Image (cartoon, rainbow, N blue to C red):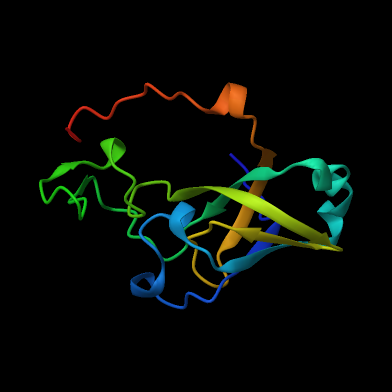
Length: 140
């Protein structure tokens, strides 16, 4: 497997304690900076209202297989949670695209820390990416 960093995320959050629990609830404006070699991949992205950002949670503990979600307080397997601590710490953020300014995407709704490596960008399609009746069984 060969994963390439395509850019870097800029946010006001320097520590995990400063970041929102879920990025969707944040009103902060953040930026996803794309490296020069990947700029052609941004063609037509300005026509998207929302994007899926995939990023590498470089400060996560990769040895964790159990987690205690803060709103539940009970231990669960890490793959049944959204804990940043996991064997392959890939973060997912569905963000509102506010502007494209050259190599920088101005977005709202992100919970990543300053300097987090950006690994991919995808358009968000509400008719494909939203499953309104999806359930997480332990969150009753």
